[in-house]
Image 1 (tube, rainbow, N blue to C red):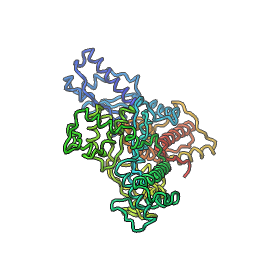
Image 2: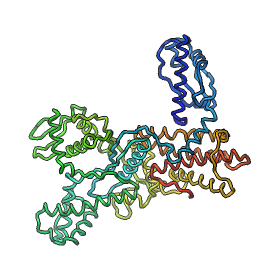
Image 3: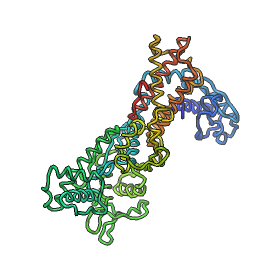
Image 4: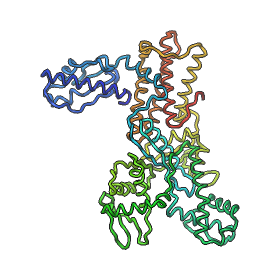
Length: 562
């Protein structure tokens, strides 16, 4: 339910089913199975807080009119264990329910009692999830796509934790394979150029300023020591020097972005431990491999892939797929996570069937591996596509982005569009200090409530915990609408976790801020009725608690003044 607590709906549904069973036992309704029915919020709340179509969907099964079924159900219905205080039969047989004052009072009291724990649940209790995200190439700095992936992955991890899952965040470091060989080649060329300017840079080498800087720094330490060694020794020495620096830089940039990982998993560890060789043997034993033209092939078409894939080239060198398979086997079998979630870029879409095929061939349920595909980001500035960093003249990196845009805004805005949709990130909007900036709008609501509380304290009015009767004074449409939205927070977290979609949370808190501003503009907090003042003050405090809980979960500041 969008704005009514799930627990309340389930209690009402249980009573409806109990009433039907009672009527069946008394012979007033046929002994037939009850079809699925819904309890939902009517479009017009004047028709009740909740409405059900149970009478209509049961007409065929019970062989009588919906109006008659509705009458029989309500005659046998007890509302004692629900928050509904009365009902009406409407139209062709809808049953509309009106919630009691106690329902709204309980919500406000519940938030007051639970405080920073409000919204947390044990929905995913006992389930271990490994969430891998960003995993940028360590041969260079992170780009704008990594900024989206970092915000998405970290916030999704937090949502899952709030829903009760045990979550580990992991960065997979590609410190082996073709890109590392290319990194070595690039470093070697720049190092040799220091002593011989005629040395040419290979066409496919990395040509960034960072490569030159690494070579020059290496030279200051070692001088010409590696000038006359073998190329392999020189390349390895350069890589051993530069790669840890790059990884440290990745960690530092991500930390500035408030992303910290539980694990930094090295691809090289899979090679060094023998896991890559072991996985080839396991796949051979699975019966889904064959040899052709001297290469070992994996018959991924057995599992729905569009074509088979090479595991071992004719020269005996594994393809990139093999360590990837070994890595996912390590996640799900060796380390025993219940679920592994990968957040990957749009160019990895074809990767899904082959990696799922691999885990299935190894006897692992492929549904334990979930892959979220994240679409591209376009930076917009002054209404135009913004591609280059003014400082470097190169593509905008994560580091240069967060120099221009507050981290709060970046984390919030990147989580406003579903991962599978392309997005435009408007830099001007992200730095704007007005209500058009979504994170500013939410933070302003939190600061506004803090200001209200401080102002009342100056007038000698301090918040206290109200009684049910006092909170029952909160009867206006604006008050009830705000309280209903607050009640939906826990369910929204659970839905967000279940769907791997943190955008539900940013949308939720934007709506919460809007409903608070609407309430504040319609309802004067300080008034002549002291009990109503206290009730409204407690509602303000409850709203502040939920906003802060959301922002804290997303690692976004909740300022007390703006």
